Image 1 (spheres, each protein chain N blue to C red):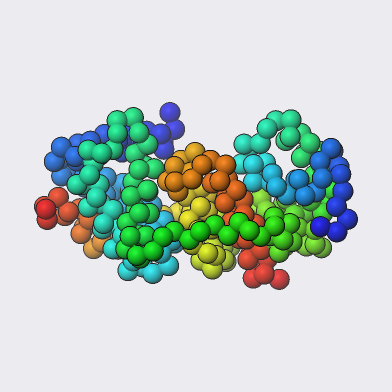
Image 2: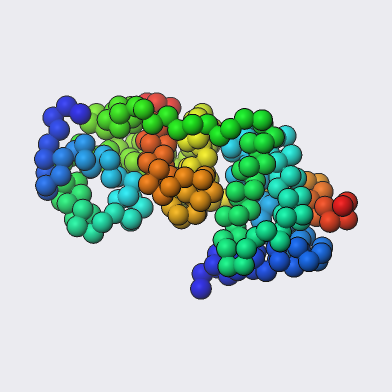
Length: 84
Length: 191
């Protein structure tokens, strides 16, 4: 990344590598504080982090509703014990 | 205990009863879990007919092999692993290999990392279900697989790794790269 910087004791490239752990809340607490400080001081990473988090959020919230399943398919599955 | 935790405990009990020949328990399991299994299979398979066939194979295996679900094991993850294996067996091919050879910075750049992007615009459009679904559908199978399990179905990192047959570290790497590719695909479709 052009203009990569060290902000909050962490470089932009290092932040990119841990972004999923940060979004998932599985990041080491000390590293989380450095990431938060970096995001506060680096516009480019703050912007990209927002888009990345929105993408993950969209997957979780928009696609998580069960698909409508054909009733005939469900009934065929329910009949499996009688078929064997 | 959360609703999902209660459901998962119920799954194990239903599987045990079905393994003992209780058809009513099996039917309840079908009603309870076939919609989410179908959603996963349909998104993974792309072709609805493959998803339906794999779903049939999945419940057939659950009925016949229910005794193999170990007591105290993760019943829901076990069912998803069966579904995944059924689909891949049906398609007569292995799961796509992760394309992990690309540098992370390259993936990030495609997704807009370091670029002049309009986060509000992309974030807003990313909430459109059809757009996200189309972007997801265009990704390689290995990417769709991990995103569906972890983000859509809500499995934990450990459960996702177990279903995929990966170490936790490898599953996390695959997930992160898949998310970056999805972000890039959304950006491409929006801009």
